[in-house]
Length: 265
Image 1: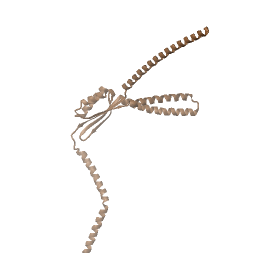
Image 2: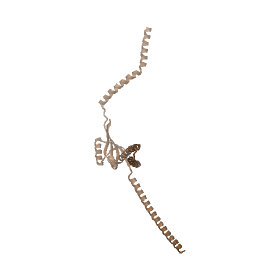
Image 3: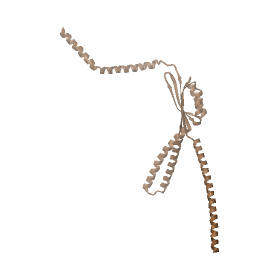
């Protein structure tokens, strides 16, 4: 009986000690989970801040104004671009009857766009219009980046499968998939390059013009008169072809009147 009581006592002590250890482990586990949850929330907040700070913005605008001298204005813009590391991607000049007009398409580092627009605006005497468009492409950028990563990973898996393939049909099918993926990757990479370029460099269209005294232009008008006169003459001939019925009726009527007069005599 004493042996039985001793065994029961030992089992009770072991049970109590194991429960205590379990409670301690549960407590420690709950503390670890709380710490992990806190670290996760901190990392999540960090990722949100990173995403907000790294928004992908495309900025473009246009400014139009009158100037007293188009050549001096062009030189001013070139000096400003040299200071701000910008460049002219396209330039057109037009000579109208009442003005000289220049049209510049400028690429400028995104962080210098506002400064360039400010410098040009302050140099203008008569501003006709100014507008700026801002396009947020963050979602598209993240989507393109994720698609590119996924396609490259899939392509790498196909390459590993190709190393293990032994049958001809398997090899051909895998090579075909790799080729299709490579085409898709190049397309996505092209879109990514376009987005990166538009994000890194903003676009500003500058249109400025110088009014001039309208010129009579005798020589050009003389040449135009000759050309237009010949065209009018040709149209006159064509018009006569539409009147042949009336001319025929008039000729017949005149001939009939003459015959009638002769009979009356």
